[in-house]
Image 1 (cartoon, rainbow, N blue to C red):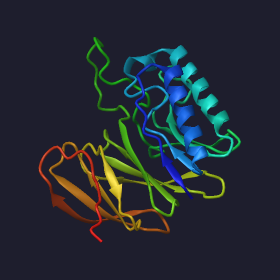
Image 2: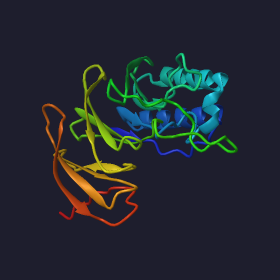
Image 3: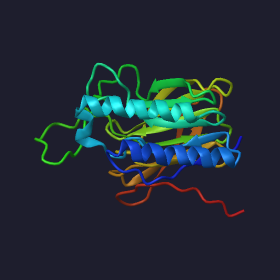
Length: 241
């Protein structure tokens, strides 16, 4: 499988402009023979959408833009993290969508444990917004797949945790497999090139955690923590072979 990483400069609130950037990247990836296009966090709305999530019209329009992106996936699959229309007018930023070569959403699943009490889609840091408690907000961050494309993991900063999913290679369906407490406010993590280990950092932690990945269950087993200083943000694994 050939995977294209679509790094675009999305503008917050510019649904039309961001959609055109995404469509251009999908076309470019398709012409290059890519099977899967992976897009940045909330590429359709721009990140962070903040108080725009309080506008029902914006949430609805963002979903229409996602549907148009899905229709463009004629021969290439796209992995998109997007808002989810629902009863809440603020939408949800805890949803992952995989769109197949026929432009249909083949899987959408919450990135949180079933018993999570976090509020999905609440805006953070909106200009001139009245003070409020952010302790129960979803604050998702990074996403990675194992090299064999059978497992996927995401990080959530409010709970300081990593969630794992099994990926069905035939259908693209995502199945939640579990949640692991990790470093405080985990912005970035990485999986080694052989898919055996996951390394997680925390923006408010002086250490990083190294886990062994169970290839059968997707469970993460803590191996060791290492001191790295304050404010660790990203993890990069480098080979010296």
